[in-house]
View (cartoon, rainbow, N blue to C red):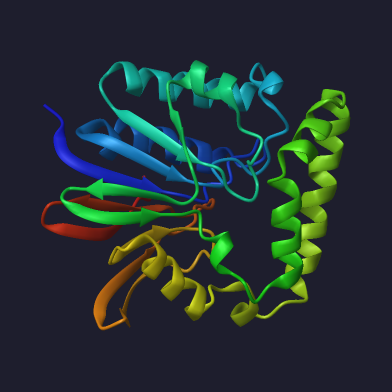
Amino acid sequence: MRADATLFISDLHLAPDSPAVLNRFLSFLDGPANQVRRLYVLGDFFETWVGDDDLSSPLPGIVVAALRKQVEAGLEIQYMHGNRDFLLGDLFSQASGARLLGDPSLIDLHGTPTLLMHGDSLCTDDLAYQKFRQQVRNPAWQQAILSRPLEERRLLAAQMRDQSSIAKDGKTMVVMDVNADAVAQAFRGHGCHRMIHGHTHRPARHILTVDGHECERWVLPDWDATAGGYLQCDRQGCQLLDWSA
């Protein structure tokens, strides 16, 4: 019987040239995720996603099959768009059995109202990135991109990834991290005292006071060739755990 617990992961950045991360994720599905009822993927599941018509490629095919297996075994999986995989669509959901979750979303997490986000919308000091985010989340822009040939989209995704790496090199960690006022406003606007997000690759539990209320903000770890991690929550609370299998 599955435990009444919920797991959260983000920023796996699955890619064909990162087989170690893929294998770690597959072992995670067969391990911790196989023991609980719910799994949330809070963005950047994939390093790039050029459209659901690429589902037949090896990496998407492996991931979709693994997700479908767990869904059919009783695991509820929900995923959120990140800044890398914002073109994940209905066909991916139908094939995998995972459900798309809006960003942000307020859920009842074992009795505690909890705000789920990818986290990039909180990085308001990075003005250039926020302009980019607004563009790529625009439905008209997305439709125009998806109308291009698949191979052209793959080249465009590679170019955007390179440009993103170059842009990061010129920014400080302070600029790329969340803005304190944006965090407070998110808590205030959704009337909750717990938040979970990824994006910044700086896993931690932060305690802060908003309008006289103690709030907790959990930041999820990213995954790479050597390590990964997840957040496990139940009625007793939450804890960050490593996954290095």
